[in-house]
Image 1 (tube, rainbow, N blue to C red):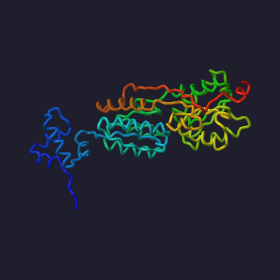
Image 2 (cartoon, rainbow, N blue to C red):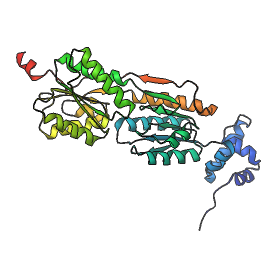
Image 3 (cartoon, helix red, strand yellow):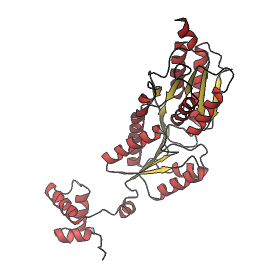
Image 4 (cartoon, one colour):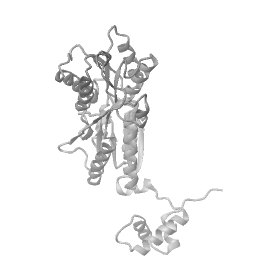
Amino acid sequence: MTTKPVTLAHLAATLELSVSTVARALADSPRIGKATTERVKAEAQRQGYVADQAARAMRQGTSSLVGFVAPDLQNEFYATAARAVSDHCQQRGLQLVLAVTNDDPATELLHVRNLYSSRVQGIVVIPGVEIAAETCRLLNAIPHVQLVRHCDKLLSDWFGIADEEAMRLGVAHLAELGHRRIAYIGSSLAMSTGVKRLEGFRRAMKEHALDASSAYIEIGGCHAESGHAAMARLLALRTPPTGVVTAGARICVGAYTSARERGVRIPEDLSFVGFSDAPAHRWWGEGLTTIALPVEDIATAAMDCLLRRAERRDQAPKQPMHVMHRPALIRRGSTAAPQRLRARA
């Protein structure tokens, strides 16, 4: 036996009100008195009424959906941002739709196309490494904001971190401890974050009178496997680095695991600066010295901007904003002076 869904017409008949009055009451219209609104909502709850969001989208030209498009959710930064965006949606009575692209252009296009056809309020997007032209066209036709990564093909506001500053913090910390052989493990230069973080590392090396041209630099993917392999190559060098700065959350996990698997003592043999500050980082060994990112602040600012644009149905802003949030270095037990300096002391 199947039960037919409760409709507005059924509610209206039960309450002896017009369908339009019931609809306005459920939408908290100021045109409907408080007592009537409360009575309508109580009856709707009693009968198990569920609003037809598809019909609402047809009437209003938009739905209550907000899209969050990310390369993956194993990255602590992206997962934390998704939670912050979800909380924001919940407070506004909106529904978050998560879409994971795995940095595949075809998958990214499929998700964006589906969100577009669902008439979403807007999209928070972490652009893929190789974004398709059709994806850009669809995104530029609806309100959206870019998070962390920046793609200049998208005519939208961007919210992220000061990537160069993040690397400067890590290099400065190691240099002040006395390290001269400092390595960098970062992601692809096809991404804006990869370019900016490497630039920040090189500039910081020069600022501390370290030879940036011959620095230990490993560039690869943004996943844990890439960080794991990069650390293995660095440790296999005849003269390995005494300190390392990682430039990605998952890269950090892979690199740290690789070092520990090879019996490297941290910080006795290698000082390690992580990236992002997952709760578990404080329990890695004596705690991970890391570059902490204000993820919730970034995600909240992006959502505030997105929903303002969605209310006006703005598409491409005339002058897109670039909003950078400053990172901070958290000092824990994974960094120390190199052995030669400790021996002298």
